[in-house]
Amino acid sequence: MSGPIVRWLETSRGSGVILILLLLGFWQFSALYIMHTPTWPPVTRIFEAWYDNIVDGTLIYHLLATLWRQMLGYWLAVVLGIALGIAMGYYRVFFNLLEPLVEIFRPVPGPAYLPVLVLFVGIGSEMKVTLILVASLFPILLNTYSGVRAIDPVQLDTARTLGLTTMQTLREVVLPAAAPNILTGMRISLAISLILAILAEMIVSNDGLGYFTLLAERTFKVPDMYAGIFTLALFGYVLNRLFLFVESKMIRWHQESSGRR
Image (cartoon, rainbow, N blue to C red; front, side, top):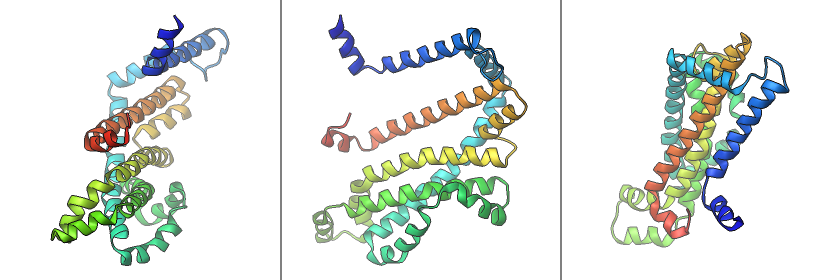
């Protein structure tokens, strides 16, 4: 029996699902028979609150508010980060101009920009989108730059020999070759954008999953608070799985050549 079980554990993610179910079962048991406290409600009560907030549209409303802010800031960071990364990697003059500035601002944690943005942008959605943009920019920029710099010079020389223009070289050679690095940066920034969106909503907002979760904690609606956290976990997981799916379609050739699965 041990052979098939070991092979199943090695080839299937079902074991991970079973572990999650066991942990939820232990949570349910401990809430009912060990920890009799309102701060540790049974899982069934959390799911009831989750269902109620979905049915009445509350969670859907806050989820959509978070989603549009995150996606707007994230995709602005994608466009700007790829453009600057290609410019720094392809043109030495842009690298010399921008590299010191990037290295000064890159180590600054995203939340540290919040007080400045509040002063200059205000406390509306513009501030939250700008915060997400700034925090998500650097992983994309740096990974794009690294991908461009790692391109074999022979490829670029071949493009020039064939008479390709600069724009054609960037489109036909540079972007495809740097795509794996760019997508790595985009995946890192996707998680960062969600973190900053939730943080901004918890600090100053009247909607969004961060606001919903913090409000539930402040009003001592503990099952609703956990329902908000569960929603965030599921939301982040779905975003990551969607990104991996798109990534696998875009660079399947790279995965096959490198032996990734």
